[in-house]
Length: 117
Length: 111
Image (cartoon, rainbow over all chains, first blue to last red; front, side, top):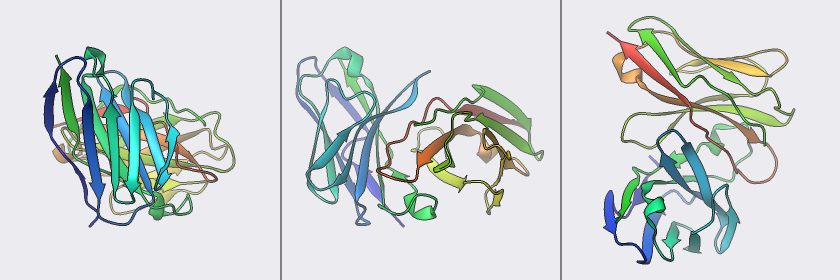
């Protein structure tokens, strides 16, 4: 089974701190994604990566950056955390398969609930 | 990318069929419809996908209208464990998999 792990389930940080959220997948997937989930707003894509060192902005990239130095690891970075970044953060991965096949399925991690005080 | 519209919430009696609608009126010919669900405190999980034809697997059935502007996910015999948020998304067949999940439908299965 595909496994996507995230470094922490719960994290509490202070305003202005630099925050790293780590995501690791063990199935050699090309694509990796970072989402945030807020009540009433659903899942929103922050960034995604389709290859090592490659990244694309999602719908809400402001205030975030990402790093993908190895295929299995995708990091989300909050350069200077703010209270409006308090949220649930979800990482996902998928194969770069042909859309319309099951190979495009995104596998999600358990999430990190980040609180910025 | 095409956007989808789903009702925010629905109830279904346990043992009955749950029919979850989704509108994707601006879908293009090379976009697929995917359904995921998210059980409380977990990440979303794939259910089913389709292009034009109706699809069925061990979890659900997907009915896509002939004009492809809407679809319905059917859980034939809903159980309490099916209580979750259900997301309908469209995925472009070319390029990379940037998708928008939206807010989904909160399905409450009632005993």
